[in-house]
Length: 145
Image (cartoon, rainbow, N blue to C red; front, side, top):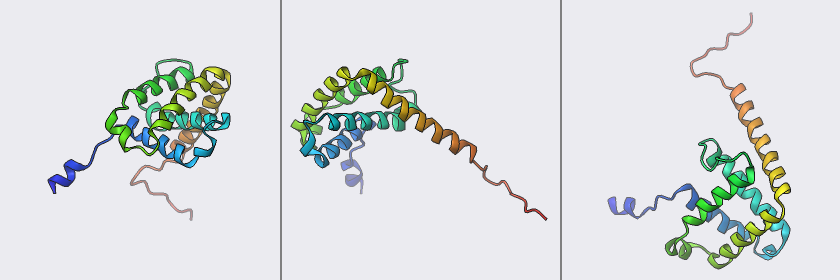
């Protein structure tokens, strides 16, 4: 049993995200050289940032959203190693796509800021709505007579 547990790799959020990007590339491999592909890849980065890093104040040192995404990008790229790259289905394409994503972001800064701001607004709206609908455990709602 211990051998099975030790064989399971505990992945960081960055490593998990690399696998998500690899799957994204697998599903969209026909459009890798398309600007729409990089916009979707950026949305994937922004969404993942909001879901897993924003609430923990990780990769959130700048008031510019693109800077925060680039901090996350640096964190994700720094986790790449040969062992992880061998496990991926599209390791060569992944490296090419990450490089091209940086080019896309630098060429479309305003659009990237707006995309992130829109996603952030949706995230905050969902978070606020969830907190308003919260019913504490053990609270009893009395029926009207």
